[in-house]
Image (cartoon, rainbow, N blue to C red; front, side, top):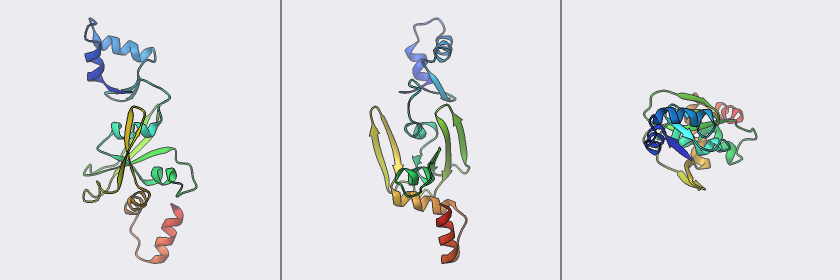
Length: 155
């Protein structure tokens, strides 16, 4: 389960030093730090379940979603997500994997995104078509059909 520093400090407010208790919980492996201020209780949690909590608002898309839908033959080891109006790419290397985030236009951001639930986790993922559109948007512009075919072969 994902927990924030504030949640953990509140849960441990009866200790003399809740911050020291949190430090011990991390040292003992009870809490696994993901990024600053965010922790996970289960080290076996899949990274795609955490992607939206690490940096958001965001949804899984690009190469990760395309691999998930079997649109590309490669296995993708980076959890790639779409954001909007962030103006820069982000990359986080965590114990749960590598997460990257890049912008798509805010006008198209909310369309064709599915809310999925697994156990106590929920996450957003683009539809197969949207993941392809997001990836083509992120690539260099193409001006001919030949360039488009070459671009799609690299995907």
